[in-house]
Length: 326
Image (cartoon, rainbow, N blue to C red; front, top):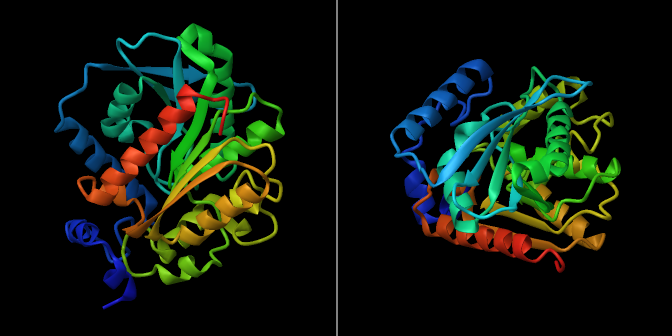
């Protein structure tokens, strides 16, 4: 039996047995259009089977810009919470090649209700149609819009955080770098959940995780090739395309990073946390034993997923309530 299976949390291992697998794993990036369609169909079917939450409202906003196509932002907010509300700018997962803004509604809406905050989900452009750093540019446009229009939207422009998951975590980190380097108002935090940060695939974990089926090494290589094309692994990659390429981590906001022990992103995420801390950035880091990539989504009823959610919600609540301390 592969070592990764022996080390895997029992509940997560049981959940994995129910995940449909192609010969190329859960996400077959040898045929991105077909996998996108299947991914969307599954997400929409799941959403249709669950009752809507009337306590959270949904709006869609289109943000125009002179140097690119409009960016759509899906804004979720508690219907009765008094404003101005803190807001989290969110980037969905999908390896930067899959997914869509509404895919996370089922658990972002409870987050809005529990934390009394708004969530602005960026419907960023996907690769390979839009190579990096196009998605981060979309994120920067959305962040500028939130800061500029906060008062009109009933939001608190002094309490905006930037967050993302998996591929979206990488885009969130790149957006934060763009905000700093272009002199924008600093977000109160960045929250990176098992983020996709490094196109080079040189770490130990990127070589170890090959047989779980949930975003293994082969899938990640295909994703980065779609995101960067011939630039993958070369010197011609900016931090706005792969944040691990950054050299200067100073003046970045307090950071939350969570990753599983059996995630191919483990070591690049741990390294990112260490480099942030070395530059004086407050970091809250969580490594989940026996957990594979996106464990909280594939095994949402597991104890590890519950632990992660409680820890993450607590961090967000603290950052929104008191932005004066790390």
